[in-house]
Image 1: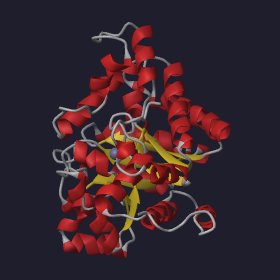
Image 2 (image 1 turned 90 degrees about the vertical axis):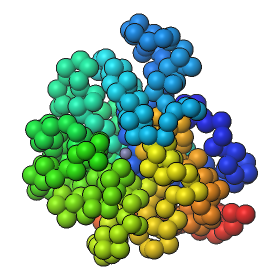
Image 3 (image 1 turned 60 degrees about the vertical axis):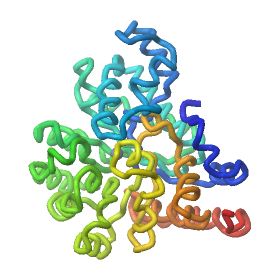
Length: 363
Ligand SMILES: [Zn+2]
């Protein structure tokens, strides 16, 4: 199991953890490039005799995963992705990691999964085109979706610290594949140094093509970054957005527009955005009435599963099992699906969450 984390399962009692694992889940914010099986990476490293200290899982782990002793800092967190870019050495590898990412989500009862990937990250090592790598990801995800009975949509990410031209290319490739389940685009990367205002035309193009928009904001930069993402770039959802609580105007604006927040607390602790899980603003965001959802961001870089994230919200932020179900329903409401399909998803979840299947207490 790639997602096993020594501590997470012990955050709550085993019986509650089993119930959390059995819940039908939705994930809206998970990066393919941060959600790779360590065993697969070790096999690739070995096959290609990559220039690494060794080819065992434990040799690979500290290079690609947050481990004890790592500074809680954005540069440390992002450096893992730099190392990972060296692993995308063939179409078969890209197919395999995309397929496995969907299999892993299905294994913890995720019923609807939006997986995001960064075409330039997958393409660069071997000089593939963005269209090629995108087609490989789509094909793998279609296969996995059928094999594991999970509904998947894709989001193409671009980095704010990379060029605007590259952003235009990502949008073009995505727009041509809207009918194959690639439904949205995302802006990620170094937020403090690159506010993203230069990407205004890129996202205008995306909207005109019918792509939905989610943007990482209010993570490493303040609430003004959330305002820019919504008002200038047209974001319907915000990745992280935890700093929204610092500005009442931005808070009000996101409430009025029903902007959804893809919150990923463990990632925020690991990258130094918040000091500890106990101090994470998720609870405040939820109580204020923001459309909050709970996500992993990166299962292998962060060494966690979505079940772990639910367990931690209960353990450290005083969420109940009913609150967790509400967060899952919020995710259905915020899904990048046509309204009718969103409603069907919500109906299905509400039926499965009904008292017949679960008792309401988490204590
Ligand atoms: Zn992210």
